[in-house]
Image (cartoon, rainbow over all chains, first blue to last red; front, side):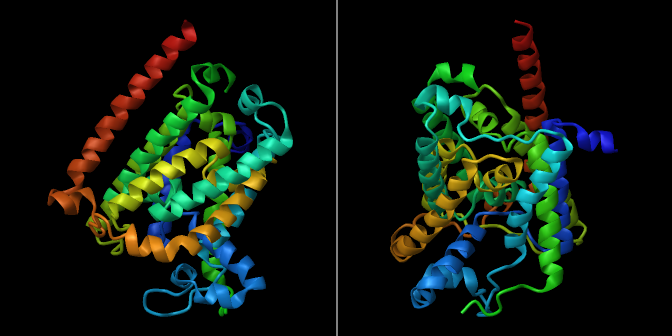
Length: 185
Length: 189
């Protein structure tokens, strides 16, 4: 058992099946579907609330995230918030067990195309994060909430999102890195 | 405001356990790596598609079996607001390629040691704040466009969901088989 946990990499089919079975458990025991990007809204509401509480309270999107459809207040730190925090801890444990921790500041593919500057990489990671969540909130979900959780429920919304995401991602990747980039991943 | 700040302890514990397992699996699968995710979008390394495809197929069989046997009653379908779903997906794809992670894998990547995932997640929080500011206009103008409600392929067509699940199982099996064969051939070449 421990030998399996110490392997640095598992088959993607095993990992995928594990995520599928994890979804059964969250549906059955918790009445929830895996998701992550709503938590970014909770984080934004919490942080903005520290400096401008009135502004957060007046915003209808934050109100939607923090008040349920029945009008009951939703806690800022809830099920999915804990899921997201423990995502990092689960990955840390997996990496320690498999001795596959990385100290990556600038990925090799990025460095090949855009140079070794950390500042430049961090700036674009930050901008990428902004664009990513704007898209996720417009679509009402991300790779976990839409592609996996919605995909397995056969939701029309989720399959539309997933197809659009892959199409745009492939186009963007080839525009940024070209066919040459394939030799650097 | 923010009252209550915390959900009940059981809910929090359940979320923590779920996150722990999810993060563990993502790291073991290698999808917490920038190069693996970019490798997928450059159509070189299909780890992401294999992982997501298997999760969807395995998940669908179990969830619809539990619905059929009455073990679960509530589904968690997001409404099909087609313009928002598709435009959001297109924007998301650009962000995911520039950052090199999606929200879940980005947070997990921080645990694995990725430094550049940290400004990435900070950007996500800023992105959520920007969306909240834009929301009133988007809710009035974009979200209502082509709104089909909480549709699944089964409810939209009136067919049994099992037709679609059978299709997914067959498509995934054939797709994965072909992919493995292709990759073996490329390794040998």
